[in-house]
Length: 289
Image 1 (spheres, rainbow, N blue to C red):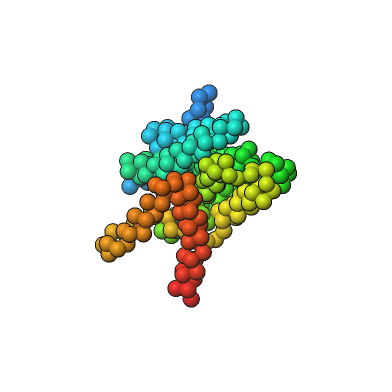
Image 2: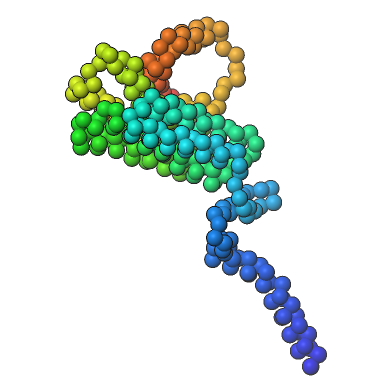
């Protein structure tokens, strides 16, 4: 009888000892003890072939590129505040190029992560939501007072809505299309408007109310395009089929126009792309009807 009790006690103690590390690990995960230091740390769950694995740290290269894009957006804001409008335009263009690069680098080296996605969105908000609005306000719409301020704010908040919606729709929408115009392309339309006006500053009267009103309307319209349900081709899924050589002719004409006058050419191409969303959406609805 005594031996049986000792055996049961030892077995119970052994079970408790075996389960303690697991319980301790679960408690550690649930109470946030992964962050028990004073330094910045990131802990993510990644899905692998054997299940979910908790990993510390971040991927260097894609997040480094995203940080460079964030720096470009920040510099654009400083340049706009100092009246250096062309530098502000160039900085946003650099941010757009870097934004297109970080995701491709992450996919190429298998370094995609939830942290990277959220960091990229925050960088986009500054570079393509805040910086273009401050650029346009500093350049033109500040003369309209509160109306100009409100129009630029509408653009910024629409960019925030657009990025938030994009985050929650990742993996649930057709990769061939953006729902609403992407924030970098919206920023390109805004900055090219300033760029073109800067190039024609000798012929344009910047104190004219109609020009200031046009700039304010541009901010609102582009902002609404970002949160619209219009479909825009994303160019993420490229068709590898051969096409007739004649297709290259309009492409050559577009590049020629851009070369002749870069800001005007980019602005025209951007506006055509913005209008293409209406055509794409109507064609999609017609096919599904």
